[in-house]
Length: 177
Image (tube, rainbow, N blue to C red; front, top):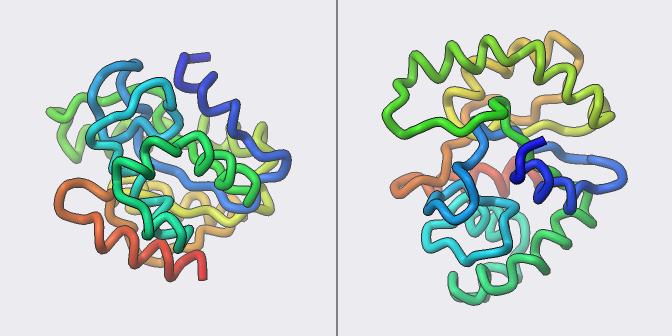
């Protein structure tokens, strides 16, 4: 189990009602990344996945500055947990930015059998699933649906990178509504 998996486990709900599946784990602790969703040890400058997810799900999060939202990360993660939300990644490794889309999709395709095992381990068969990022949606949506999982998004949910934050929040809020 990676150090990130240990951090994530702290926030696992008793029953997962909505499972978010992103692409790959963040880099090690202390490395600047927009994907450090469950890490609370450091305030990450570009913690876009966390801040945009909270703002899409919780109207009160929109009332806070980004700095205040990040400073209260533990509280918001507990809220996320208590609402039955949980986030995992298809890939149990971190990918460098230089990995091409084609390479990423091949890795995701190869990871699908393990993802299905993990979903069973999480007892997430009744959970709603939201796929984050085009690579994940394009490769995993159909196999997950074919396996009987309830994938909510019928189109890709943009990763909240530098240019897709607003689209991510709007699409996620509609999916959850």
